[in-house]
Length: 86
Image (cartoon, rainbow, N blue to C red; front, top):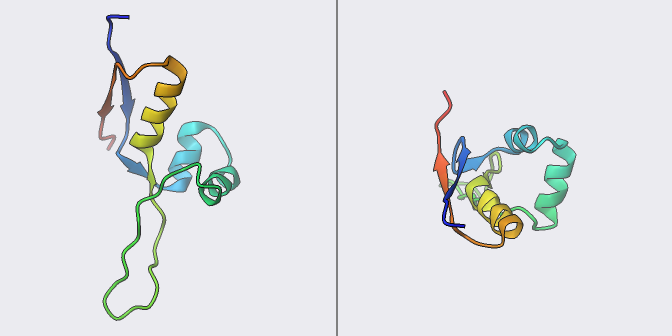
């Protein structure tokens, strides 16, 4: 187990539609997981003059992949590479 495992992801955070495409699941499942707190999201800010926070939700994809890899491998000897796909 001396070898380091490398995981490539597009960004630190992704939108639900991108998450569904990357993980091969339906968008409905992504929203259900968000409501059940299985996915951690970035907090939204309240804009000046507004009463509620709005906008699209963003999922912490890097944290999700790190947790998933830690559970599968049983150790944390891996690195996550953020590769910007244009």
